[in-house]
Image (cartoon, rainbow, N blue to C red; front, side, top):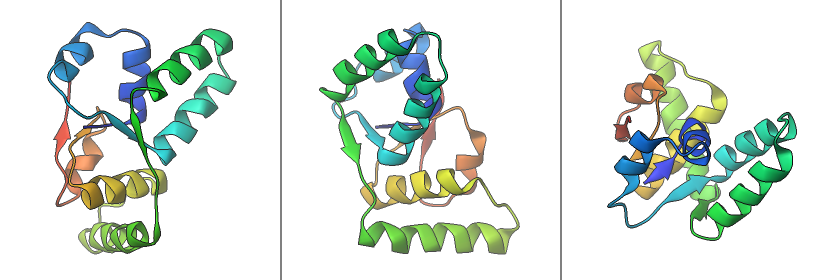
Length: 125
């Protein structure tokens, strides 16, 4: 399962509902885009040291999915489909959706606009 940035934040905050959702998950991943968004949040937090330590520990157990040349095809498809449907979503989330579609993994997120992207499955907690 791929964790969106809001899921990473909730996991860092020990959200019990999110932890229950992840209980039986064999593979936990984040995208490089989510990692950048979360690190941006850390940079503006009063708890930088604590969150950085938590993130480093988390990353030792999670996969980081990076965009590659193939991802760019998925990205172009996602953006084109959403544009044709008149339902654009933020550019970073298009990249996240592209990686999610590419890897065929569900995304754990509270962002309902992922539901507008065909070929991905969003799980909410």
